[in-house]
Length: 549
Image (cartoon, rainbow, N blue to C red; front, top):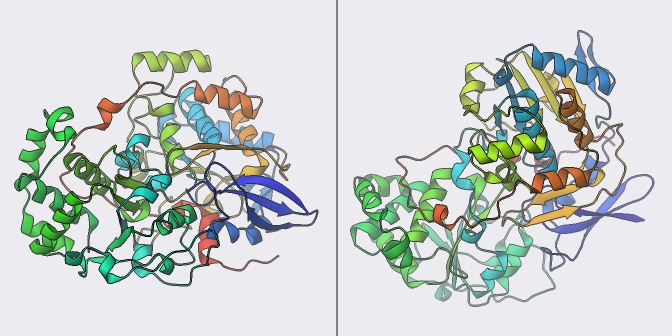
C-alpha cells in the first residue's frame, strides 16, 4: 500500500491526511500530524470521498457537445473553440467563475487569464453568489485561532447543524471530557434561544474535529448554542441595546474609532427595537440578560458557520466585538468557519471584481505592478457587477471552473439559471448537471494530482505536493496556463513558477487601520443560493449516494 500526502479538500479546517492506495484503487485516508492536525482526526466528509475518487465515470478528456451528444476531442481543439468564443463577444461579456475547492494557484491563473488575457474583469464565484461576500473576508488578526479556545471561558455557537445535535460522535482517545451540567451555564441564560451544549452530542457529520477537541479539553468552558430565529436581527438588537444604554467600552470606542462612533450611534438608534426583537424571536428581558452575560465574559468566543450566517450578520458581529472590546484580544471575539477548503483563497487571489490578488485595491501602483509582472500593456480593472451581468444576460459566455451551480441549487431557486448564456465552458471531475449544459467540458484533476496550496478557515496557507500522476494529458494548471498563452501571456512552466508569481502580489504591510471600523448595515443580506459550497464532490459526500464502481 502506498500513500499520498493531502490537505483536506472538502472541509475548511485544513486537516492533514494520507491517502492510501494500491495499483488498483484508492483505499482510505489516515490522519497525518501537521501544522493543523495535532490529533488523530479525519474530516468525516473527506472519508466519504473514496468511492468518488475511484469512480470510473470520471472525465479524462475534453468533451464537445454535438447533436448526437458529447464527443471526445483534443485539448488543442477545445482551446480553439474556447478562444473563438471569447473573441466573438466583447471582453466583459465573458464571465469567469472559480470554485472554492480550487487551489490558490488555480484561482490565481483564472483571474490572470480573465484580467490580463481576455481583458475582462467580469469575475466571481457561485460559492458567494448573491450574498454580498465582502464582510466574509475577515482579517486574520480578528479571527480567533483554534488554540485560543482552550483558554476561553465561554463559547457561543451559531449554526443550523449545531441546532439539530443529531447522531453519534466517535469517542476520541486523546482527551476525556466531563459532560456539561445545567449548573455549568449562566443561570439566567437557560432559555429557549440559548441552549447549553454537551460536546459529546456533536454529530458524526461535524466537520471541524480540531475545534471539537479544543472545546472538549477545556472542562470549565461554558458552551451554548444560539437558537434565535434570525441571527442578523438578534446581533443588531444587541448592538442597539449596548449603544442605547451606553454600555460600549474599551479602547476601540475610546480611541481607535471614536470619530466613527457618533455616526454609527446615530444610525443604529434609528432602528425599531421591537421590530428587531420580533424578527429575532427573543424578548427584551432575554436580550438584556444576554448583554449582561456577554459583557462580563471577557474571554468569550462566538463561533459561526459561514453557510448559515449572512455577510451583514458577520459585519454586525464585528461591530459587536469593537463595541465590547472583544476584538483582537486572546481567546475572545469571533471564529469564522468557512464551508469549503479554500473559500478564503477566493478573496486572497482576487476572484471578485473589486479586488486583485492579495486583496489589493486597484491603485495606479498595483495596476502597474500587474502589467509589469504579466508583461501586458493593459489589465482589466474597471468595476463590473458580476451578478447583474449574469442575471441580465450580459454575460454571454460563462467559464465555470470547479463549480456545479445547477446541481447544488437550494430548493426554490430558479432552475433556468444558465439559460441566458450563449456559450458555456465547464471544468470538472464528472458530468455534473452544470457540465451537461456546457458546450465544452474540460477534465479537472484532484489536488494530489496537481499540487498547490489552500488557505484554511483561520487564514493559514498550507501547501501540498503533486503525489500522483493525473489520468489526463494536461492537469488543470497546465490547461489554464495554455489558455493564458493563447491570449499572449508568458507561460507558467511549473507549480513553483505560479506560486512565486502569485506571492509577489501579497500584502506585507499592516492593515489595522482598515480593520477597526464601525460599519452600519441597513438590512440583512442574503444567505447562499447553493448547497455544499457549490461543489459537486462535496454534495456527493454529504448525500452519500452510491455510484457504480
